[in-house]
Image (tube, rainbow, N blue to C red; front, side, top):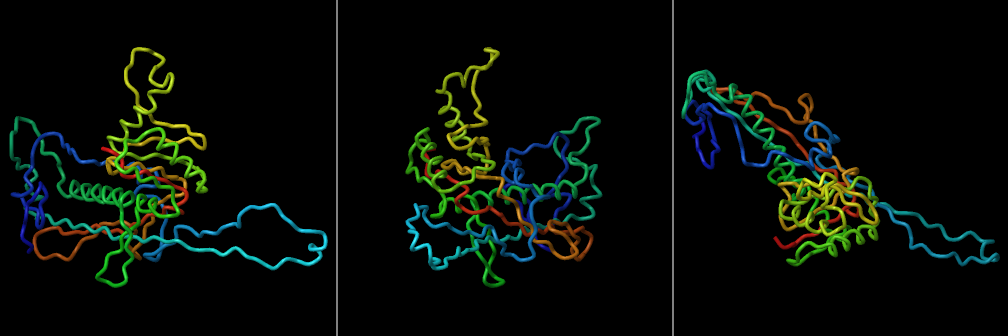
Length: 327
């Protein structure tokens, strides 16, 4: 039986009556549980499926530079040399998400044994330890997916001892094919935003369903930037103070503005979510994200939650980012 270790309010190993005590009172966590990007593109129950850990994100082709034809009547009597558009495939990978729960029968039996302050009529919260732990693991996976989809660093496994890691949006946006501004410690400004909008337009972005993702600090800065516009901070009722910029209209597109706790504070991301989706690799006969019982070693319920998830982000030119902002 594995040893139990408790660190930072996390119990590693066997969950018992003594290291997972019951308390009365409402459950709270200060950690982020909302995953805006993942939710927008399908969540843990939507998206696409693949039967290979590596999957295509785009097939790119180019047109030659536009030019005015210079073909005489005499020259047109002979067909020009044949030319053809070549294509190039871009890919990403799914990564493994794997969690284990191991609760003793005694722990599950002692649902009425409570620690801490108790008064008459109070009930333990949660009432079902296993259900709480499963929900906790699924939220942990969603948090890990959100973090990976934003800041993940690409790694393609070449052997069983290497991990596949899905490419995140910020890494994609710092590639040569994407519009990216390195701010070098500058404060986010209208000038920097306009520069990014222009680079995206010149880069060939489709501007389908654009969303700006930012951390808490940059969300405040964005609201400050746009309060200088006439009327933006004057509600019709005239008895409400403050401003919360939720949508921006540019010369090229409209976009929503979303505060995402998993965004680095020194960056903003502008993503075309119309061309993004989570990708799941199913295990035959089990599904894409599932819980199953593990072999028993004694009087405990041991189960695992397993899934293989990656990001279909589309081609890099659809998106843009500013990194290295002042915080």
